Amino acid sequence: YHAKKNKLNYQYFDTSLNEKALTSFELSNKIKEALENNEFALYYQPIYSLTENKIKSAEALLRLFSKNTSMSPDKFLPIVKDLGLINEINNWVLDNAFKQLSIWNKYKKDFSISINISFSQIYSQDFIDFTKECIKKYKINPKNIIFEITEDETLEDIDKASYILDSLKNIGIKIAIDDFGTGYSSLAYITKLPVDILKIDKSLIKDIEKEKNIEIIKAILSISKTLNFSVVAEGVETQKQLEILKNLKVEKIQGYILDPPLKAYEFETKYIKSKT
Ligand code: C2E
Ligand code: MG
Ligand code: MG
Ligand code: MG
Image (cartoon, rainbow, N blue to C red; front, side):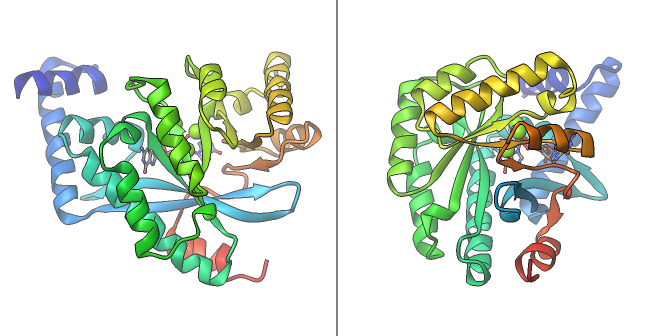
């Protein structure tokens, strides 16, 4: 147990040693409690199509609310993993997002939801089975599901990943590479994995006014055109960024300029049940 605690300390805190031990212990207790009490929620952020001038999809983003604190998934997911509870939460995300999609598809039959999936998740034994089960259970059209593959430390075997993702693609699910333009193996991913969509990382969008970034984005768009990927720019915050992206003919955008991730019912009121 000690080793585990130290690992958590090492990764998340750089204050004094005593403070560290206490805080990481509290943190993992909080997360255990949250799992028991079902204090997780999925928020939904709209993805806007500049070519069609409408919102046809949303990304599901996990939130943890525990006794007045909310925490970023980047921070709590590695802890959930260390606690050995990651499968449980991953399946919870899939089940909930699919359930939501089945409801929203009653209003908009082509609406799709993007779900974040880590490499370690796709290697887990029951991932495919569970996905198929949920599709059946909620009578989902798999064409309305996008899996956003997020890099984590476990890229065991890219050929194995490719094989698994192929089987998902065969039933109609679309595959996106998340945070494209960061990470180390992004180019290997697009040559080896069955990709449909590239999501340009927000770090490239943030400094988009720099000439270098524009050139990199142009290169991504050029590859995407040749290989027939669609492209989403993430983290679009300003009008200026939007203008540049429009001029570059980027297809879709996501970011605070539209909306932050919203509670499901807020998203529903604003984007599913509204006329637009
Ligand atoms: P991501 O998939 O790249 O998600 C985009 C992140 O950017 C989200 O952070 C979102 O809230 C944030 N964002 C959206 N628009 C803007 C903007 O205009 N400016 C800025 N600065 N940020 C923006 P969030 O929700 O904290 O999620 C962080 C990461 O955690 C996600 O990055 C994803 O990798 C992971 N994650 C979230 N939910 C899940 C999940 O259900 N399963 C897994 N495996 N990972 C998840
Ligand atoms: Mg994502
Ligand atoms: Mg990410
Ligand atoms: Mg991203």
